[in-house]
Length: 115
Ligand SMILES: [Cu+2]
Figure 1: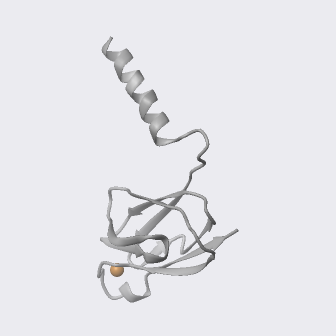
Figure 2: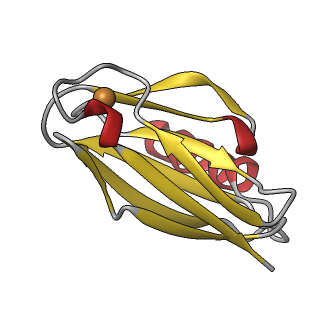
């Protein structure tokens, strides 16, 4: 019975997290001293995308005001997930938001939003 409840909870969780009509893709980005890898990502206009950030060296952070991510997302060894749905096309530059050393100012992630 316990197992059945667990299975039901999993199924309900899956339904709640991913409605049948929504298509969510995921992009993995790693952060290290002093770069985001990849350094450029491309998103589709109006398509929800899950950004998964992991720090492989040092502690970093990011804000992406153009995509509504205004608070600093901390990037360390534990994955940080951010859902974004771009509402306008263009090329945006997101910068590391946590001072991480000599190369901090050069640490940028370029985000292209295309139709
Ligand atoms: Cu930094």
